Image (cartoon, rainbow, N blue to C red; front, side, top):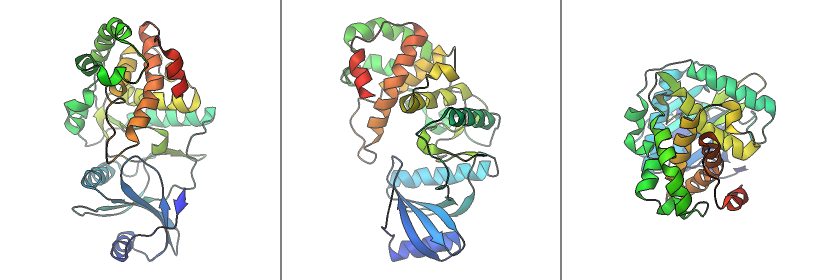
Length: 302
């Protein structure tokens, strides 16, 4: 979806310096879950995609994303970097325009196969990046153990009761503890349909600010609940025999989906709830846990 909104004169001039060409038109691109200005910039010779931070946290994200691009440029799964301008509050990142690519959903079997193959190819790479814990810290590992300490936000979702949680938590906590985050492979760590696009010959991943060296099975598993929500493809069809991954991923969303809305990213909780709606049944199947007492409510969420 695009509108005709344009940047201020000062910002437009900065974007032109970054792109290196006169911009004939700015087309606002809607999408993403963080407050970033996004434009498809039309030039005399083509087009380029530009992101500009609007709040301090997105300025940090763009700085991090640019740093990652400098470490992984030229790989088949990475868009071309077209320009960068550092700025304390409104840095500018210019990338290859990918608007002509296919952005799922809808998903076709060939699209799923193509993305899975490209994810495996990405994981065959390494890069000069920090480890999962160095990049994300301990907070990102909060899962079922955190739910055990404060079950109220999870229970408030209305899918489970205390009886189910008491019976299931020991198994979920033990399984997620057996899922390491560390690894030496390049991992994107934010794989979702809005961060990947396809042509007949390429699959590209965007929004690399969470990238790190980590466990590739966990990186793949992190995408599968959203794929299941959008396509109906069960996670175990792509990643079988992975109860530890199912527990870790479902715990990540279980510890967050019921928390208060994030002011600068109000859509995040909704997306986390959607992914929990498929990640939790995956963990139940993988660990042979009792069925949810309010399974019908969970199905309504989907």
